[in-house]
Length: 206
Ligand SMILES: C[S@@+](CC[C@H](N)C(=O)[O-])C[C@H]1O[C@@H](n2cnc3c(N)ncnc32)[C@H](O)[C@@H]1O
Figure (cartoon, rainbow, N blue to C red):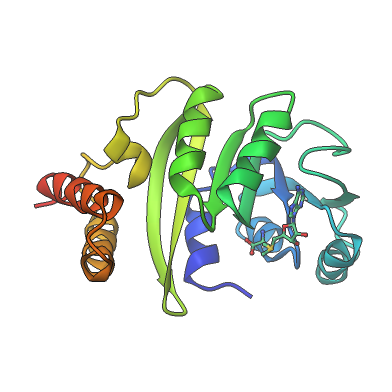
């Protein structure tokens, strides 16, 4: 099953030999990546054996897929060229990336703590190359692609989008949503600062 969020994740995957789907749960991302020819081989992993069993069922018998129960990249049969880590909090994702002994290209779908994750990626030697802002089921999802490299992120970039100075219609719509949301919150110093950062980012989207 795919929807706009999974389609957006797929749009960020560059064709690879080996793709890891970390925290795969049902395995829909890995299955769709194989179907679209985005990977020759997929390595699905999940910390929960019960979740991984769902993926085993939908990819049953496909010799291009392997399955590992473990934390993050632990126990994968080989190094992944690219990895999708989506549907978890930004702090959990950052921990998984930090514990990985090498630097695969990443496609990330953090559900919360997104500014924290951008900062951690920066500190771990990653450069965020693309961000997408996707609405599905009445909520927004932020998705990003990162690769080993350097990048200077100011506070607005960490808060809203590493590429906030690049014109992007999806991001402009996301900013409109955030402006409306934070406009309704109590005017605390933090909320006023976030509103100023939203306006600062808007300047680049006109
Ligand atoms: C909400 S599901 C996301 C499924 C899929 N990645 C997606 O985006 O649709 C989150 C999955 O991450 C797994 N998970 C959580 N922490 C993990 C970790 N440290 N290592 C591997 N898997 C983890 C959970 O067991 C769960 O199956």
